[in-house]
Length: 76
Image 1 (cartoon, rainbow, N blue to C red):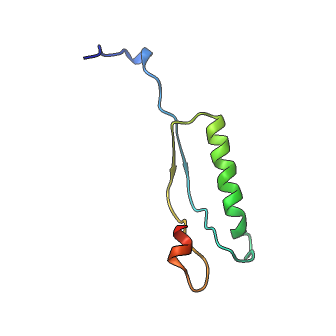
Image 2: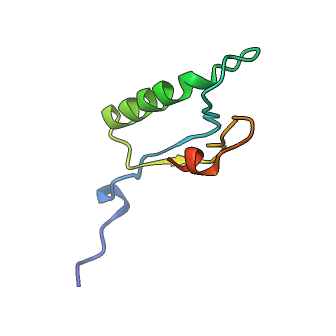
């Protein structure tokens, strides 16, 4: 069994959170640019990789704004 490490020897866990990407293949509505969501998410992941975070948590709203919603398309 490994000896317990002191607080000073422990590495902090770096966690970041992102949410509400709202991707859809639809034209912009108001201030929402749905088609930009994939590019923005790729950019976010790139920044998090450069910052060497340990975890990036996506809180949800990866929902399909298409009419009618297509679950298979949303999940892909």
